[in-house]
Image (cartoon, rainbow, N blue to C red; front, side):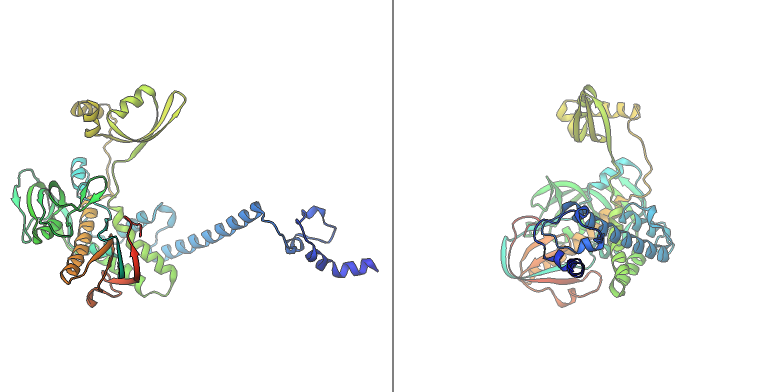
Length: 424
């Protein structure tokens, strides 16, 4: 009788058990894995939980990659495995289409020219103007960099002038990248960035490299600017128009979430590809003597001592400042480095620092126009971060919407504290 009753109620008896769940091998016949897993467990099995999580994570990742890869092949006939990053994928799509690419991107292969123009290239700028506020508006731009890329770009025809010495104003016909003497007009907002342990927008006087259109904008608002030398470029119109409009339309209208995310990524990651640093890092295992020599001429990013050797990651470029600080002759060191063939001249067919710098400059011009307009209307800007701003008055209605380059109101803020860059 007991056996019959036990066979009927065994499952319920298992559920009534209190205590640590025994391993499956301690159970009688008839308790398979499926039944065993139904038995409650009052302790956390770290190994089992981790394996379950990773299994599901890998399955979902595979499904995402498969969906993305299929979408990419159907629309662009490009296989996902040919690109390691989303920016290189966007670059490949752009170059492979006659509709998008018109062979009008300047490739800067000379390292001296590259280094000069790169000085005019600044990343995103974050600033805190007021540390706290109430009843604020937080706005974000719809695809700021793609929108900025619709402006005229530097073309493939260029020339260098070492003795320009000309004042620049809003009507100047200069177009390119120039080394200038700057004197600000003491505006509340700085209009030209500068590298000084980060990026600042200073007041005062200094010299640096800038894109011509940003210089004209600053001159329009009272800056005194003298162009000393620089690189003239021809203008190319609508370089990215077809690409930007194509992917923004998909992003804005499609109901398919995969297409929406893919188009958004391809739209936002193309421009950054042009600004890659051509000065790559090197990693070598060096003796103590070689390591000390390297420290006197090149920038070491990090190193680890391995016995009597050093595993060193460094920039393979003779650094003038480091040479001067170490008492080393920069010119002779540079010549010897070239003779020893430690510097390899490479062909960079996927980098255009002129494009990257111009797009970033146009983006800053756009944001500065909005900030100055708010100031003129009696408003205040509390915080900005590249493509967003926080203000105490609403933007003009024509600036807000769903179109490319318009702002969207992300939040109405009851009270905010802006501690520092990206901390609020």
